[in-house]
Length: 299
View (spheres, rainbow, N blue to C red):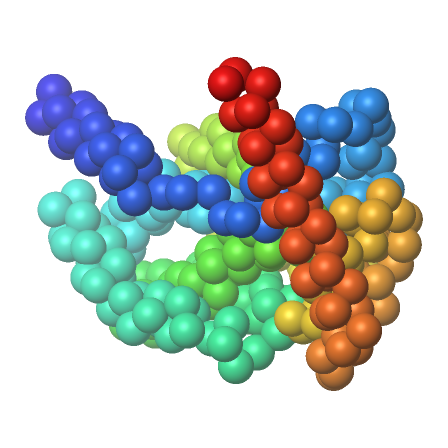
């Protein structure tokens, strides 16, 4: 019951912070206004972005299969190495504490590394580490407990990288008009993966197939790495600016093409910036004129 009270308290705090601190950006407001004026449905507008959306949704799905599958069952995994459940709980708690530095590094790494390569590194490292655990589980899980625990913590550290990117990538690569929609679809797909991972890994644990859990993680991480290579784009700030401009102009296919063209390594041309400033100024003037006309009519 206490756990539910804690969960409710954090949920209430999040709601308060959402109301008091979160505001829509000007870019989103302009994009949302154009979307409302458009006759194209959201589903049809999203169709050209099917490839990046599939990439972000599938990556999040596979990541949550791994994360939730292991975290829901790691007490039992460590219990197989120790004499008491108490020792396994303490081991789980210590493993979480030791991973905190990796989580902190993962939070800052996108400033210095492409998120595509960051995600690929995380999934690849997770696959390699769990492959070792799967192959040598019988030999090391009782005889070399320190080695087993160290490898388990290392794979948790690698999980920190896609833990950041699976949320970060869909938050930036889609146009402002339906960025929230794409992020929501990706997150919802991830929770489906969490359900699948929790159930499947629990089934393996209950059947006594602990080593199969590591084989499953290895295969899932490899599939996630392939998904990252095939479907996740590379970009820089200029790429996102040009993509956003093309999307606002109604050229969604062109926007996707710009996204997958990779980093431009250049800033938008001065003429483009002037054009955008002129467009913004014109919108503001039109809104001011409409407001003035409305006021005169009311007078």
